Length: 112
Length: 426
Image 1 (cartoon, rainbow over the protein chains, first blue to last red):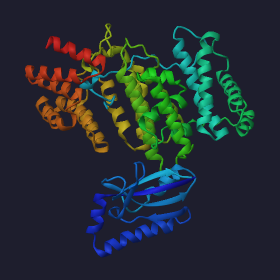
Image 2 (cartoon, rainbow over the protein chains, first blue to last red):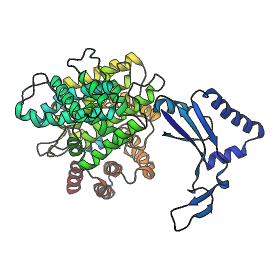
Image 3 (spheres, chains in turn cyan, blue):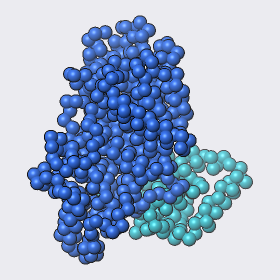
Image 4 (cartoon, rainbow over the protein chains, first blue to last red):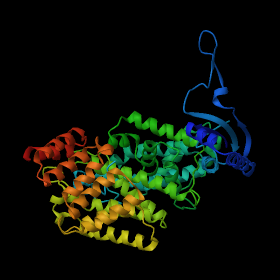
């Protein structure tokens, strides 16, 4: 089955990441790189999003389209990236998500 | 949230006055509903397990079993329980499947192969239990699904047992089945590294089921279904299917130790009797011995203590004491400390305070209970426990106020009656 893992950052996580020294930060990024390398066989596609403050949102449900600054939902938790994976079932997707070395929340959704 | 290992103050919550789980009986005697339910329970889960394996579609298979169960519940009370109930259920499910799955030629071909008895009749219900109790399902859905798929309850029976509208239960089950299919929740026993966590989820479902049946039961309440009986049956089934897991045995012992005290839990007017006041000669001492032996057996064989084994050990201390005063409170206190170490919880600390009172006095216990105020101020039992301790310290006025507050916060009618009565004579 195909699943999308959505990686979600919390405010606390971003603060921690910012507070890290250069070496620590590099190690954190390397851990993520390693995770993608280790699981390359099942990851069919992945994307890292720019920070939430760079987002632009367009609403099409009004009389005319409205463009606003920022993500569609203001919150303390924001999606920072996606990985599309092809695994047998939810338990395998969960196992993969469990080993994710970075941001503290991962949402798993079946995808088609 | 009250654990049934709950002690004296918590004996506001007692045991279910249910019948013992006699397993079989093909004739419909006086307790025909109970016999019927037990026969269905023995067979529905097996049928569900085989159909899911056969069709590879949890939802479609479950629909067929549910149809067969509903037909059985309608016809068996009139026609009598068939000699081979499982074969009967297989036949009905098969016929029903060939009928409703008309357009699914793939399913029809598979169903046509369904034979009773099955050639390889391994008990597949462990997979079934793990799927129904998957942590990716909402807790209420896990309970409803387990009752329906593993125990063979109809939606109406589940709704009656939990006093919720049938539509609510139906919706929970439909959503859960959709999620199983669409999110790819697997139908298998988890791998070794996932097992502890997944088993904890299964045990939590059984424990909640037991609690629900145990706490909500009163003799007057017409019980469409004895949930305590289902919980014990599930724990026993799981103990048979996963013998290497001491917590399963611990939970089974815990349930049996509570049930062994059923007969003394209500007086002849149907009112709850506190543990301290129960007539201990009415306890089932044979059942207590057996449950204690079961607990000692698993604890010794595995040497892996866990919350259920510890709660069962506390229940065993109470069950083995000749009187309330004779209870080994010091041992109970040690067990509570171990339990809190493994599973910290304010409610457990509240129960521990009762043992603390017996070992170190009411003043020490009250100090501990007062420290729990931020967590438990809206919990009826916290106020009731404070009332007992204050009364012991001679603070009758304050105790009364606490009992009144407890009464406001208690939804369970039997507990309400007990508190109301205490207020009339204090």
